[in-house]
Length: 345
Image 1 (tube, rainbow, N blue to C red):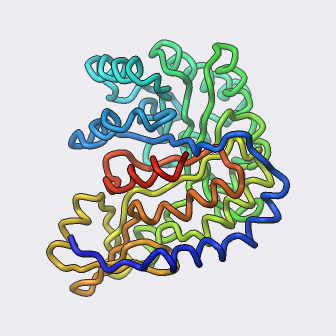
Image 2 (cartoon, rainbow, N blue to C red):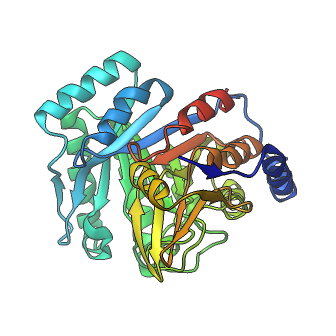
Image 3 (cartoon, rainbow, N blue to C red):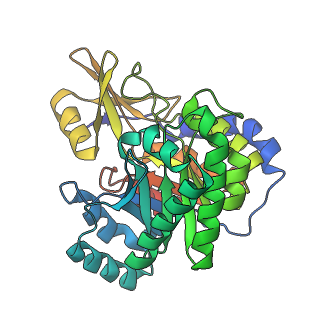
């Protein structure tokens, strides 16, 4: 696959340009750990590529989460179709071999606010929801819960904060951990319902680890554009580090792309990206975002490859963050791994 790349000099200038933005926050924080940790989300309902990536790269990961628990639209909690009994056996083998922590990811089905709002309706419903989540995590032998309740509304803010506090306390009583994914924003309370429902400081006090979803700067119904440009990511994470202890923060790193026609974008993994470049390339590297860009037949595609991860590693180090969180294993550029292994030390 031929790719027209911006050389290292351009990358260096770009990272240097980020430093003034980060410096004032970085002065307030320091870390004793030089290694940039990596976590990842994986799926068990795809073509097997996600689980295969987990098997291959588990030694580079601190922990991983998979879609395990569903919040239905009536507010009830159910075990999803995965992991199956055979998949649990496979995961136990990986854990034993690599000492990996596996979290049960809890998602609101369709990212609908309806079910979560039903769960937040009263103190009794919050307590019941917490108990149901914790029971699955305990019964399944997970190391904790990865809470991914998205696209709520501003009015849910208080109830959601109380729910997260109670969930963290309940998990901690079983010596389990709470990690959570949160929407990106550059100030409180945020510009739309999802981030407005998430009070960064309060959630950071309750959770053990917080993964900021610093991707979809441009999304599947927006104009074509970078998925996670370093300048935007730096602003989001610099703000997050003023609200949440940096040692709890993970920078969400995209491992996918979008292929847009107008304002309709199709999500693509590395295999689909490589096929498009082979048919319509070469691709070019966008100097500002460091992402790969391909234009063809009236379409515009962006992909976040391994090279585009370099500025994100610089941001993690500058702010003293815990590490990176990849969405998702199995769709990533294979070239990410040697770059991460070399630069994360």
